[in-house]
Image (cartoon, rainbow, N blue to C red; front, side, top):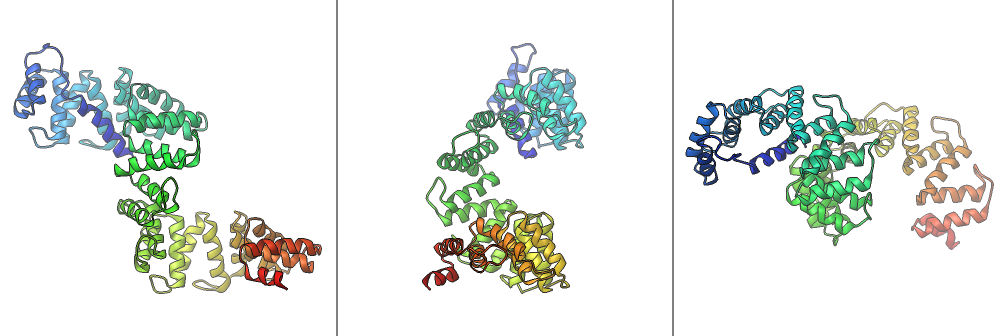
Amino acid sequence: MLVRYLRVIATAFVMGLAISVPNAFAGMAEGDAAFKQGDWKTALKEFSALALAGNAIAQFNLGMMYEKGLGVDPDNSQAFEWYQKAAKNENAYAQSKLGIYYSSGIGVKRNDERAAEWFRKAAEKGNAAGQAGLGFLYLTGRGVLQDYKKAAEWSQKAAQQGMPTAQYNLGFIYQRSTGHRDYKQAAEWYRKAAQQGWAEAQNSLGNMYMDGIGVDRDYKQAFEWFEMAAQQGLAEAQVNLGRSYQNGMGVDRDYKQAFEWYERAAKQGLADAQNNLGFMYLNGMGVDRNYKQAFEWHEKAAQQGMAIAQNNLGFMYSNGVGVGRDYEQAFEWYEKAAKQGLADAQVNLGFLYEKGSGVAQDRKKALKLFEQSARQGFARAQLSLGDAYKYGWGMRENSEKAFYWNNKAALQGDSEGQVRVAQAYEYGHGVKLDRNKALDWFRKAAAQGHPVAKDHLLR
């Protein structure tokens, strides 16, 4: 995000190159004309003479030529030196450039405090790039104390001058900062930046349409904005576009297209896309089923710390899918995901403790994990706790608590939970006998195709 953010600020300067003034200095007009014609040799000669004489505009232009390799070999160190000379001569464009160089460590050792100083000098002169840069530092707490209020103030100044990076940041502040939260304003500023082609804003606006935040929910609009950003190569938008194709949201379902967009994002290293690509290979969606490829992509995502991918990798090791069965490896990956609070991984880890697979058997730890997962609303864990209380696994039998947890799962629509609750009502286990309620729950489970419930209703 930061590198691309700074690159766009830099692009704003390129659009202004070469900076010129009416013939205040001999050679400026000649240098400017030569630059516009692509005559780098003449432009370099004219700007160099003026720059050595202390002309700030020429110094800035010369810095840009060294940065972009126009008539000279690209040399960020030389570019930095000329920008510094121009900045010290109070050129606001150069001052913003120094902010960028110090922020990103281009041509000079990274120094966020110095970046903030130079961005501030430019910002106070009304320079939009300086205002945007300073707002970004306040937003991220780099070189200055994090301050959303100041971030919003400086971003607003730059945004009102049409700087897309600032418009995006302002949208982000309105969306995420509790002290400034205003989803409608967030959507409006994202739209302004998106309409200028700023990919992050296009993706964010797509997310707002997808979720109906700040705008009416509109999957077609979401798809269109995701597509614009994805075409620019933004990995986050590519994975969002893949989801739209996979789920048929705003576009006809197309697993092949979903696979292709996930693959593009995955190759950029985005863990979310790598995990989704693994899922597509695992299930043969949009591509031939390939367990080995599924394992490799889940592994890439898991190694980046993505909990869902770590859980998926644990599943593959536990079941020998795409890799030799290895309960110890399964345990390690389930544990990593469980420590991040993933309910699915907590119950899977609990099963390994319960069975003593890949780790010493420990039913107390298993029950603790089941409860952690169950309290997050994970039905499979709730059913496991129901079993533990019903059969006294690692604890005393308690039919009331067994009913409590099975009922939790049933109320979420889990058909197995519904059958267990029906049986509890039918026989009065842990709850007062009530055959009418039992029949109601059997019908709910049967409607979902549960074989025990269907068989019961046929009696």
